[in-house]
Image 1 (tube, rainbow, N blue to C red):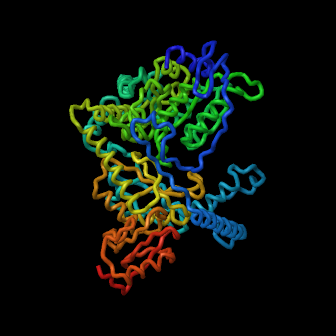
Image 2 (image 1 turned 60 degrees about the vertical axis):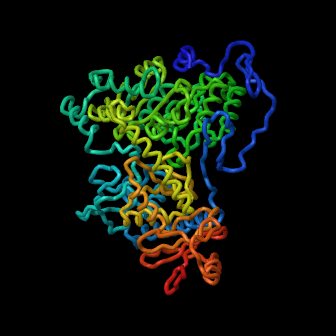
Image 3 (image 1 turned 135 degrees about the vertical axis):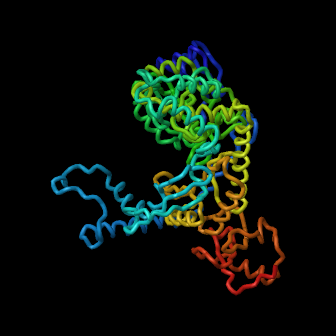
Length: 616
């Protein structure tokens, strides 16, 4: 990004304009700010899931991601489940209206009944009748450091999750698979904690002012200098809140007459920032470079609506790791398109910074790219660094502009000093500037844990989403009833997980999401996937046929896998097993040995072995 292009980004000049004359392009040529090209038909991908790269020459290593389509039978059953819940929801609303069933919903006062409602009717209906059924899976109070293990305050509900009571008991040593503690810096002992304590004794807990007044401490200047050096950019700026880093800075960079091209799975903070900016927003299909290129071409050819004037600037907004899908941005291809069509790139590395790349510097480091090819580098300190806040890095002109125009810089309180010290210490550990190899060891451990955990789940036949190197591992549950059951049953086994459903995901793609950490041991991961197999209410991949012998202690051994019998069974027993591939039994076995069978014809099969002796 040259100095002239930096000024265009800040001043609002048309980002796609080129010098007069003719400039060659793969799809034609640009002349007098217009793109001339041969007519091309936009081809929609046949599949939602693309496991290979479109431009393999841009990648230094294979780019592997898996997204298995929802089976038709599962999709139909999921829609039926939501339909049944909706019918019973309206029935219960009718009973509540006539006081046949106790109503726990807050009601408007009589004098306000003719007021416009604060919430849309469906949103309130969904909360009352669907969300409340499984509300106990969220907002669980924690009474310890959320590290590899944590302690939960036990609570019970006597009115179907409308209210909760604490029992006074504590659930100890719950394996934490839900926190974004990628490098294990969520801890209350060690170098980071000691440095934060010293910082508190020196500066206090808070500043009580903005950076532009009296809230600019020397520790903030040190932090921003270190972040710029870590990212490999000219300058950086730190903010006290990661969400506001996006929502308050995008409006400072774009406005009316600008175009934002946003990935359809971008985070809510990016969506809010784009809407607040007043820019025109176009959404392209997730990680689909054909869709993005089509929008870029159309934007240049047609210009702004009605006037057809050139856009003041075009900003592509993507994430490093998409937190609900576990997928990585196709950054080499995005950068290639950005350069070809003279657009700007805003990269959100909230989940990828510290967790990806050989040096922990995010997806730019992971793909071996030049940080200067990304115009605006954004990230947060809340995940890999075990702290709070966010940052933006880039050219010095960009950062100086944001210091004068960003609402988050002018009106928000600066980062708490002990939090800033936590970031500085953890970042120096990652960079190896503490004189130890602790940072490199944690990066290696995170990569090994991610590969191991994903491989084990895939080998056992579960449907998982995302990139093979992503520490965010979504496992598909599909049906709404399984969301609550899975979270509760895992907690009974001392495993804390995050379950996600509609509207955070598509209605037929409810899932459990696991966040791998360098602090996890192999024993913890073994406990996790043994617990998954015990539940047996999770759909497994249609590409596997697995027969596994289990008992109440968890996963024991595989009898049949990928066309090979691992144990010798008599022909009669083998035939007996295969005849039962058409049965489905949707239940959990707690104390009885059973066999799990998987075939192309059924989502899952459970065959009980009461009184049956297998001649192993």
